Image (cartoon, one colour):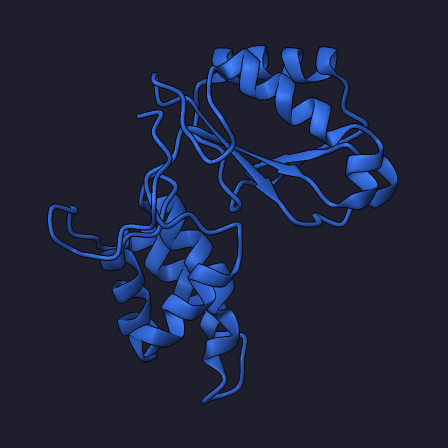
Length: 185
């Protein structure tokens, strides 16, 4: 599983997707917050819910279910899902480590942090560990410029990172072994 993965753009060989009743109710509540004809404004949080329901990634089947639920054209959903780094278009590990690599974080050591994570996990950015536990991604600015280097895992920011702090985080995540999602509260 450690090979770099491209987006999966087919439904062939991918399990069907349906929202759970609880997720469907949450999606409908989100859409109801907007005036009639403007429910598309809820697309990003609805995609987060779909991703959480689909083992941390958005398959074509999941995106098609979002389009159907929201009354959107499929391409409208694909465009948004493929634009933002927070959406995964292929299977990912239990934990996705999004490491900021923009200039402020780079100046404070994000390149060294990425190299450390690659060595510690035995993968390169864009790959998933053989055990399926971690996916390492480099992303553009996560808006924590004053506290870099930083990474995001699910809904949690980890800032002012050092190799020691990252090592502790990896140990904590391994012990927890529960998928982290953007929908975590």
